[in-house]
Figure 1: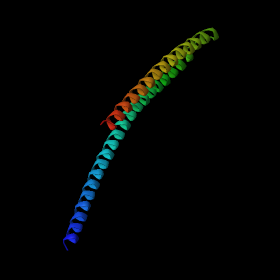
Figure 2: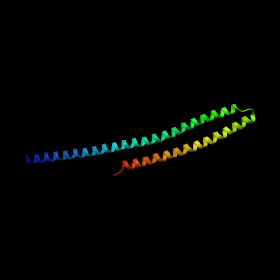
Figure 3: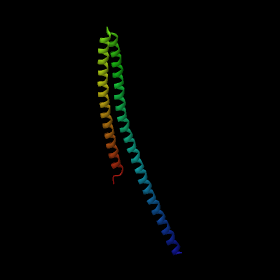
Length: 132
């Protein structure tokens, strides 16, 4: 009978240890999952923020370009002859080309900055997620 009690106690102790270890593993797993979710939210927020900046810049460029086309068309309607029309049209084209080139450069720089910032954010979050 004493041997049966010892066996029962040993089984109860082993079972308790297994349950305790399982709870620790589950708690650590839950903690890591929460960290991952927080990191994904932070990364998505950074990506959305940079996307918004790019979209705003592109929209601002669109508004500027529409206004420039309208102003250019207005200037063309005020020309008196073909030579004047050609001069104004050439000026409009040159101005538009310069504007588009500058806008493209700004958007490229903004895109590069967004890419760099998002890579840095990902790097930080990766380091944070796998920190000891």
